[in-house]
Length: 215
Image (cartoon, rainbow, N blue to C red; front, side, top):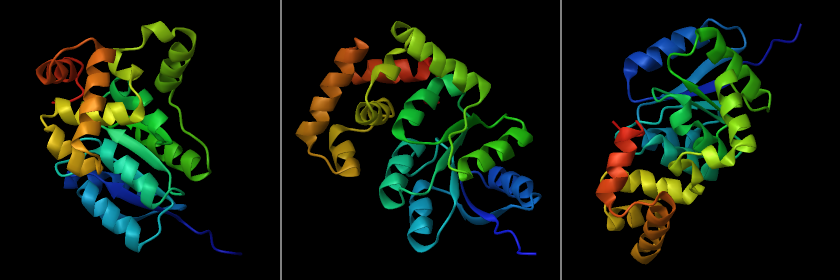
């Protein structure tokens, strides 16, 4: 009998205990294997440049490069590798924006182990994984678009700039990180403020904290 090829998983999370728990969970399955670990977004990019993976499991909140930026860079470097977001933030806070940005599934870290494994298999099979909660969010967005929260009205790039501004980054820093001109970043900032009906960066930070988008 031909031996089954295990799906190769890359774990990206800055907490070693989280990676260890996920590794133990995944390694219990006959068809899955943890082929790499990264403690930061930059390490994840280094890993995918030198090795092949069937899926990356990615956290959002990381010190050097957040999950929003890392997702975008992973798609640029390795567009055929799907990404599952596994975050401490609840699905209603980030899921819709990140699904639109290209991730194939989103789960909170308190999801049942069985659901995490199921999501990995579904995504490795080439499909999206939508939890019941996320499916409800998407249905609400389609049937009641006016009920979107303000940050959900932003485009992918606008959301990226919003997240960085809310986290305290200056336009110059954002321009360097996103390979844009400062003028372009300022244009995005203006659009974000207009769409969200806010006036200052401090307002963006307050909104992000209030909506638990940053801690």
